Image (cartoon, rainbow over all chains, first blue to last red; front, side):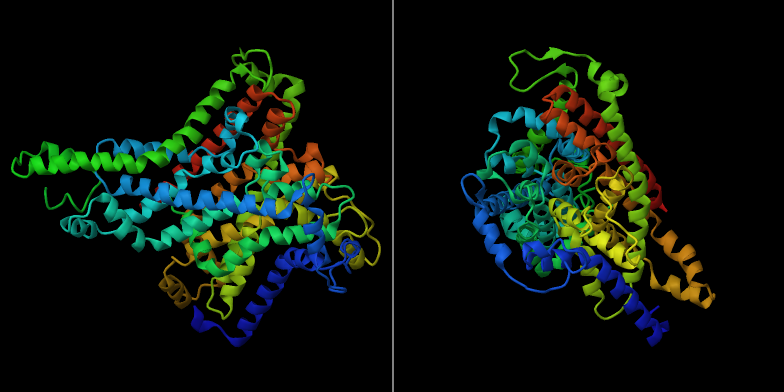
Length: 280
Length: 330
């Protein structure tokens, strides 16, 4: 295919892609440029786009206005999001990979049944258990752990690890066993180090979903001191009258950590998504 | 049998129990028992978590849907039979908003599935070439996927703002040479759902695009070379090489999109609550479940809604597996 491409054709390709990409990225530009403009100039027709009077005032204003017990503290919202994401990602990598190893590499009676159970549980979307979970854990509202613990075990993550582990040649474990390594050492010393790609893509996908998590906090969190960022931005944007410059600055602070991770680990993001396309 | 067994772990235990080879058996059986203990210890935390936070709550949803339950009410939960379901579908007070939500969900899916899948396919084909900087373009189109939906809702609330100063309104004003007045995109019944479609597709299309791109890259290049020798036009190539080559992926993506479109909640909730979005035209099944549980404190009814929600998603998932599987076999 590449051979038949003429320079004209190539220029055309670039132009089409550039125009499409520009239109597509406009909302992101709007977010970043708007966050750097005085608040009264954000909602100001097309000139709301032009980068005049760039200033970081909105950022300091966000940090100032979210800086009391009644409004909550910005760094507290950020801390809650970071902490919950950290526990869900690291805890999840640990228990889900271990379970997948037990289900894919060790031989024991009942293993097929347990794996079938995991596959069945994978069919249940979180949305259809949110209400009973909310009812069951009503007494734990406004705690940190209730935001994290239910999401550590993850059937889809087990499935992703399972798919990867199954392809590792058995001879590797046979050799380890001959050297006297039990299943734990085999797993942690041999399987885990050689499975970095699947760990990375599961970690990133889990982080992405957890960072944007909204439905569960809506149900379980009302206290600003344990409120994660996405819930807070929905509260913050509902203030009357809205201060658009500050809202956009808040938005940038909310998405920046993910964008940074994305910039560094793009390959894993894409792999994580593509691996969700594994046909079952 | 022994030589095959280590390579294929698919049938655990059984061949060995049947085999009458007495010599190595005690040692192996001992290791097997140990393996079982280790395996259970390894599997227990995750599977225990799944049972506690997915399995039991799901069963509980079904049970709660048969009861009249309220949080913090002094009244004991009372058995309600199928009353919640009957009300959801036939009692005008409750079935009105619920059926509207269901209809909105179906409308959303009916628009988003073809639109987003088509757009994702177009982008994937455009991006499936050997150009310099193609990686940059792929990243740009994928970027909104990493944006939390809560933030996407806020950005688009501003773009679609109803004042004359709103980005879209002022753009249309400029293009129409001043003939375009202020229009309330989110608040108007006619355009509220369309607005939600636009911002959802913008955020989600990169996800589908990446999956389709992976599918496109699995089509052997020789097929294109052969079709070029046969002087096939670009359209013929697309119809007879590209489409059949990614049929399975395409069906998978369409069904994945339809499942995801039923789960829509964040953007609708945020914009209805604080962004002037028309509630009736955009409420979804999950929005209805949350407001029923939370604002009306009617846990039983909300559970019935989530059970219905689950059944819809389950049907879509089963269809997905049915449709994709035959393709895998040929």
